Image (cartoon, rainbow, N blue to C red; front, side, top):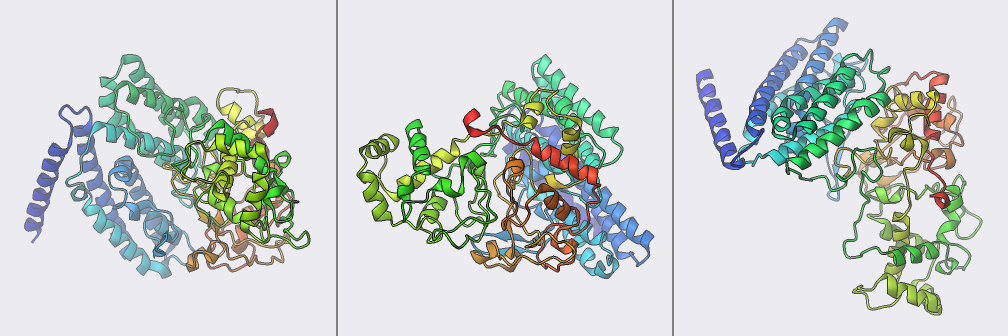
Length: 610
């Protein structure tokens, strides 16, 4: 039987190789080496997963036995990191079970969901106090991964592998390392993010050599230099918590990203699969590195439309009582918030359910409203205009009033010169104009942005250490992803994540009162969405108090204390659907102040000064 399996395995490998020969370009540079590297790496990964199965099968309640299982999981993680860049690009759907986040993956709009599976899910179990009691679950997880790993090479059958694809995979892997790897997103309990980043970058270094030799000498040397500097900095780190991420970025990682982009351009092997990324920007922290979310491909934004949108933003004619405008709840002078716990409703007496978030980074989200129920900015704008609690506008009345103003009629004609909508003014055009204004906001002008792009003396020691804590020990960067520090998930930035924090309605954490807002569940009734909300940007939080969707926290100290204690479940609530870890961060009062100092350094210049 074993001999038969060997024969079948060899035959399968020959078939895969034949498919590769058909798929690669005529004069490949590095595809041959890369495919062979992946073959060896996938065999090693499958072997380590088999060992993990064996270790878990023999696991007992003894702490040494559980520690052995944890150690083997770490070995498996490193084996996967050797082939991550290739697997994540060419086998994205097949390999999700290996390293996906340990939460229920919900497929909208079908509302289908998948049970958490993979190394991250296993990590959560192995670091639980009752790890042994979940042995059956661990065995099932290990078996699924090992079975899938055995077929990795066969999954590539028929795929076209070329140099442009491989270089794009490497480019995306750099972003994955910079934004997920070194922040601890992959392994928050193991705390192996730095050593795993070393393994991932070492893999890229080996697979880049053929391309480096094929490029112009100065470029190749430069890529090698910064790659080695990255590896050197990662290799001498002491602990995950103490790693100097800011120096890593500025001295090695960001220059490497820049030089790799130039090398790919020099080889004329540019390709882009991540439409949210702007490859014209040198690195992820460069201005404009992330594209805005344009979901209306039929409308071309022009300066006249932006100017019209700016005027409409403060136009009270759009409301049902001629008293309210967008600026009522999103005041430009207050970083497009209103400073209220929750905004005052249309009747002037009651309150809107949720806090008014800043609009400064609204164009960098895939869904709008705190629960993400609107697909885009124009859809959100129409919903606000028609809401009885917000603008309470009658569309016909609004249009009639605007048509009486010759200046508006002229502005709309100039703003929509090729519109298929025959009407001069419509609610849809109003919404698109205001959305164009919101998309025009100049951002990323903070002290931090200026520092990371070269003004080396602008941040003080507290702010620098705060960044390192934010991206490390404090685990903030595992939900507020760089560079926008919001829920846009790297490296493709094509998903806006939602989280459940187990939020409270009060700040007395010894006697917490659970928040009852159902969040996204109200519009997408899947139980795992109960109490979930978008992860907003933390840029400008120094100017946008109060905080959270219910405005419960008035200071950043309160916010940090809540997170430091492990969210709602960490302070004694029992939220079944909390996605935030309930384990304390163990930040000291000084470390909390340092994180807050960094958050203050994310304050953009006021809009009128830009």
